[in-house]
Each structure stands twice: as C-alpha cells, then as structure tokens.
Amino acid sequence: MFGKVKTGQPAAAGPDSSPAECNVVLLGMMGSGKSALTVKFLTKRFISEYDPLLEDVYSSEQVVDQQPVTVRVMDTCDQEGPVNNERYLTWGSVFLVVYSIDSMESFKCCQLYLHMLSLHRKSPIILLGNKLDMDLYRQVSRSEAESVASCYGCVFFEVSACLDYLSVQHVFFEAIRRARKG
Ligand code: GDP
Ligand code: MG
Image (cartoon, rainbow, N blue to C red; front, side, top):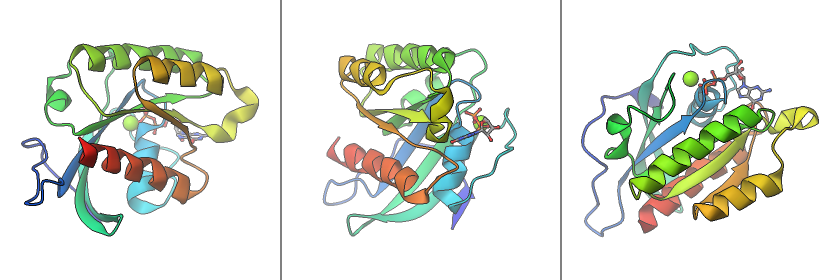
C-alpha cells in the first residue's frame, strides 16, 4: 500500500548505516510521464490521465534486496523548469530525471535539471527516458542519452509507464540501491 505524506527531513540512516528510508524525487518537463511512472511503481497500473498540475509526495513500504525500506516518492510539477528547487534539493536522496523519448524538447529540459543538480553536487541521479512504447516516434537516440548521462556521471535507463511493471520497478529499486550506497 502507499499513501500521501508531508515532506519533512531528509531520509534518515538506519542503525547499520544503510538508509531505512529513501526519498526519491522525479524531475523533468511536464508531459514526460513522471506521474504515470510514479503511479505505475506504486500501484502497478497505468493511469493515462493524471492531473498535470498535481505535485505530491507518496510513501510506500518496499523490500529491496531483502531489506525493508520506506520509499517516499516526490512527483514534482515544475511549470518553469528547475528554478524553485529548494523543496526537493535537501529532501531527496536520489533523483530521477525524466524525459520522453519522443520529445527532444523534454530531453533538452532534462539537461537543465542535470546541470542544476550537478551545480548543487547532488547525486545519485538516474536519467530516465520514458514512453519506450513510442519508439516509432523516437526523437532521442539511446546513444545521445547515454553520452549525456556519462557526462553527468549518472546511469541511464529507458522504460514505458504503460508497458511492464517490472522494468519500472527495476528503475526505482536501482535508485534505492544507489541511494543506499550514498
Ligand atoms: P508528467 O507531467 O511528467 O507528470 O506527465 P504525465 O504522467 O501526466 O503524462 C503525460 C502524458 O503522457 C499523459 O497523457 C500520459 O498518459 C502519457 N504517458 C505517460 N507515460 C507514458 C508512456 O510510457 N507511454 C505513453 N504512450 N504515454 C505515456
Ligand atoms: Mg505530473
């Protein structure tokens, strides 16, 4: 199950120094599929029409590599790009920067987020190309995205919020693993 939560302090470390909590922040241009990915991870379902102006934080109990973790997901909504970033910069333990593979504009917007995160020395970061089901209309090649990801020292995946759940779960679990490593 999952529920909405208020944003509070950054995720705390557990007694064995591996975080028992993980705050995942989704960033990227409106329309790239952040809400669809969030809902897919939390409910295993694809909701095609989600309020585009809704920004919220959700909490979910997960087990990653046999270790329980409280995952909080902040599904952001920036209408002006990466300007008002205080709310997630200190809160987040890992950042998913999302674009849509059928939109070069969303990929350019991702680079603004990657740049801003690097200026604030934030990591780990995952660059995530969404809407893999729209491969026919692809505007952003894998190699282009891979090279941008390597410039910023982040890992890169492509998924679709409307295809299989396990690929989406894999990305979130990978985010949690990377946050654990610090
Ligand atoms: P957000 O503004 O980043 O939160 O984007 P949304 O999650 O609201 O998605 C924007 C639009 O893209 C909606 O119409 C979604 O149904 C659609 N969408 C989201 N993810 C996918 C996907 O993986 N494939 C396809 N084909 N459409 C998607
Ligand atoms: Mg949204």
